[in-house]
Image (cartoon, rainbow, N blue to C red; front, side, top):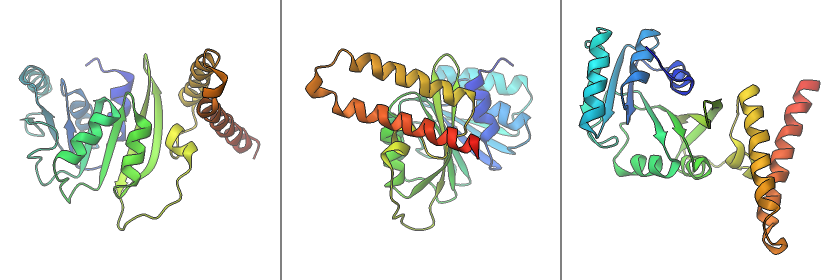
Length: 225
């Protein structure tokens, strides 16, 4: 089975016996997670019949019909109540927020794996103000840079001091080559934009560049220690 680096990483991070992949496309994350024997049961959910039919065919080809069910649903509407972990990938952070707000999240869901391809800042802000803790992030370079957020339901309302650096660049991010390349790429992108902006409009972007430098210095300090 051909599966991208991004999807393989997401599948490897699945940590609960019963998961649901929202917007499952061809069902590859569910299949890979079950094959790794980290997941006993999975729900492959999508609002489109075409991808879901392909997912069903893929599931059958691996003889996993007893462990993976397909569900034609929009978002988390009618999500099976025994779901323990939600996976949402392949869409923007604002759309992920819309999905999470559209229907109640079953109480059994104690963690989520979220991989926005844009608007990660907005998603992080939403999560920490809606009683979810971002416990780990990992950036994957797979044609584009994708942040993968692992979040857990907080047992009580959080009253945490949030640093703008974390909202912008990630909470508890795995320090690896992909993440360092992401920081370098992002700095180059923002620097190029800054050079074309009027001086009186540069403050916000200059602050973002300072936060990247601060994050890089912290990572270097850890290496020295």
